[in-house]
Image (cartoon, rainbow, N blue to C red; front, side, top):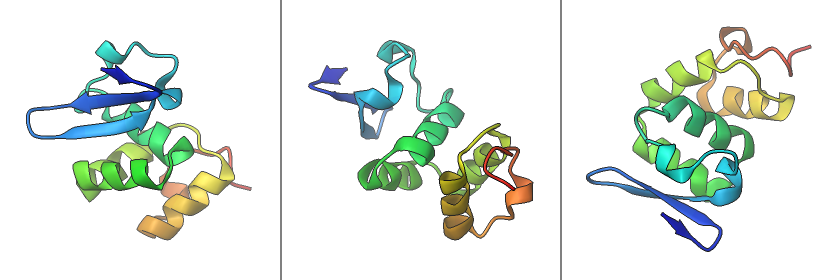
Length: 101
């Protein structure tokens, strides 16, 4: 569902609102909170704002987020450092290598 420049992703109990610009390349009807959690987590961590980040950490449990973060192939250095500060995760445990060096 599109409302202005906002998309709303729903499941039976939750409704998350994100800026449409985060998912400009994907038809909204194809985005599923459970099936596409890696994509959603990646976009929010790398391009999201504080409100979007809060929604993600309140929707997915910490273990789900950490598992998905470890599978993502590339993050910029700023995002890798943010992940490290929030979760105290060793950057070597993340597949993303772009920002390490």
